[in-house]
Length: 242
Image (tube, rainbow, N blue to C red; front, top):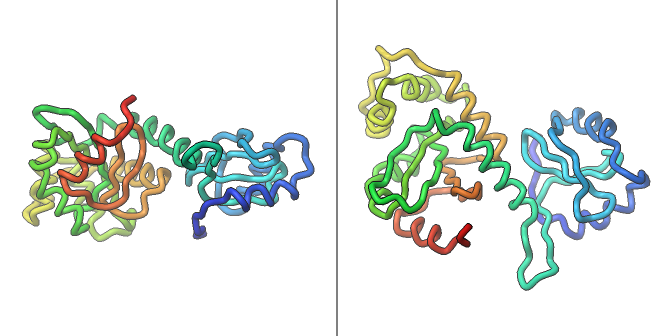
């Protein structure tokens, strides 16, 4: 099922008219969402009365108290000088926690004078992923450590799923990645790890990755698409310090 994400401030306000239940009926919400293949992991009130924030394996959605109506999109707070994307804030925190759980299986290209760490969902068949990889030294020179997670864009149906499984099965994963990105990888003698690639792909889907490369910053914010080393460093420098 495909949804078109959009800002939902006005839509959400309108939807509160449909809610006649005093508090969220978690059982009803779960039952309604199961009809469209979504399983809530948490249900909580949103800032809008009668509309609830529901975290699912496919991201954050918003439902009425009875689960009969739901909206997929971003919820903004517009009370300050600039609108604040509350959905993005929630997703960033979730992404940060999920990424941390995968650290041991990442392929890491460390910067000698590390100032920033980014995690990149990559696909060996992706042209811009190869472009990014060819500039790894540039990122490292900018003080950026690059960590890879696998995201074969078609999942297990991808033509390169087996290749990426072999990369994660290699004794020297970084060299295997280098070879694969340059077209010189021999996977014939490697015991593949499809379990790792499958788990990383599923993580990417849950985080909303729909293309590669997808760059995740240390705070969990995701930047879709390729960024040149200098531009990425400038963006990282501009982020609020935690």
